[in-house]
Image (cartoon, each protein chain N blue to C red):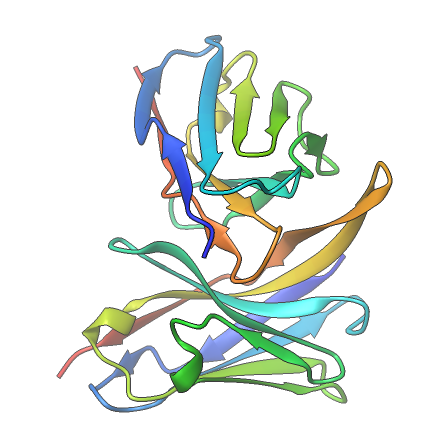
Length: 124
Length: 107
C-alpha cells in the first residue's frame, strides 16, 4: 500500500520560493510518475508538473518558468520548488502518484495516490 | 490546453436518489477520462479511470460512461457517504486538466 507524506513551509512572503518535499512509503518508486497538484478556490485543481524515477520532468506551461521538480531515488522522495511566489500561489498543494493502468487494450493514466496536502499561504 | 467543463456545479439530492454529473472536453480525448471524489478537508480519491473502469474498492453504485468529448458519472443510489465534490480529469495529454467540480449536497 503506497502512502505519500509531504512537508514544507506553509507561510511565505511574496517573491520567496515555495519548497515542498514528498516521501513515498510502501511501494516501488520506479514505474510511476510523481506529480504536484494544487487546489485553490479560484482556480480549482491545477496540475503543476511531474517527474519520473529517472528524473525526466514535464511541467505545466503556465508555471514552467517558475517550477522545478526534482527527485532523490535513494530516499524515495521528490520535491517541488516554485519561485517568485505571489498571493495567486496560495493554495493547498498535493503530491500525487501517477500510474499507468491497463484497461481493455490500452494503458490509461490515473492519479491514484495522494498526499495529505499542505496549505501554503503567500502574504506580506 | 484541453478545457474540461462539468455540469452542474452543484446539486442537492436525497439518499437513494440517482445522480448524474456531466463532463465535457474541449476536444476529443477518447476514453482518457478520470473521475475523482473529494470530501471536505481531504485529498481527492480516484473513483473511475478510462471513463468507465472502477478503481479497486469503489462501490458498484458508481459508474462512468462516454468517449470523445462527452462523459457522465452516475451514482445509482446515493448514500450518505457520497455527499462530496466530484471532479473529472483528462489524461489524454499534458498538462492534465480538471473540471471545476460538482458539489453533491444533501437535500
